[in-house]
Image (cartoon, rainbow, N blue to C red):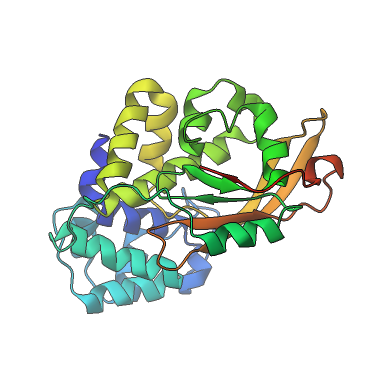
Amino acid sequence: MPDTVRNELGAFLRARREATPPAVAGFPDGPRRRTPGLRRAELAAAAGVSVDYLTRLEQGRDRRPSTEILTALADVLSLSGDERVHLHRLLKAASGGVCAMSAPVSREVRPTVTAMLARLSGTPALVVNQLTEVLACTPAFERLAAPIGLLDGEPPNLARYVFTDPRAREAFPDWAGVAAERAADLRAGAALGDRHAARLAEELSLTAGGAFTEHYAATAMLPARVGTERWRDPGGGELVLPYETLDLAGADDQRLVVYLPADVPAYPLRARTAPRTG
């Protein structure tokens, strides 16, 4: 397991600080800055804490900050609602308040979710769990994913495909960006004590080596739940696919990912059969 999981709270704070433009916190963005983000002294001053204390937080030497301090830091960093929830979960995990997940990984998709996928048959969509396993998908997604080998596993796994299947680098023109998101998925789960995500991260650190560990170590922030991916078109071109992610209530960390292709040729989207399920 990569060493970075030992100080996820501090790593998350540092990553968000370094990604926050100075202007967001009211500081000038001058040409003398060596990095685009906030300096440690700037964040400390804006949040009302000492530089020494913030340093100890980021380095993992203090893992029990008060809720008030975390809220002040979150305000300065303009964290989203999801990021604030993740920050407080990291605090509980660091202080021993979150137990490792011991329940089996959920791979059952509710009938109502399957029915929803059937309504989306002409749209690329899939259901994944916390391990990035593909539990179900629409025929439109299968038309895109099957030719590149993404659905070959049992069950298919997005992270394992991206890091261990040589076809992935050809399938995704922006492979590094996709790899960073898949690594962030696993790190977010492992940081909160999900032993299943931690085990998969450990497996990939061995099977994929530096291709995985470098992305895992560098991605302390939450994975994006909305964005755009570039795929190789099964017909030989390139597809630009904006996507949205929806958490499925009461489904053990399952989520629905829907791609909204505006420029995809009609043939990959034609519905053929019922949605694929695990």
